[in-house]
Length: 114
Image (cartoon, rainbow, N blue to C red):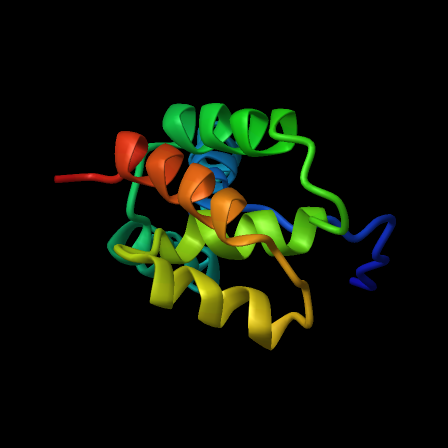
């Protein structure tokens, strides 16, 4: 069976978990899918609903040069402080003003699992 990639889109770990769960309702999951689901569930730091809300709120901040890839990385890591958040932006070569870092961090802390 040949697999053809139709489109690439960055998705958060909580969304991966949900997508695989939905696929499992339609057919038996393959071992690799079960492993991916387990790993995504283990490392997800918020729920799928909260990840969607967080993504929407970060986009609504209107920060220039903030790509979907960077937003998903922020959601997947859910940094606990500004220095961790800054590291994500440095690795993706995105420059964000300090006041915007604080706004993003406030949103993250609102949705982060306790």
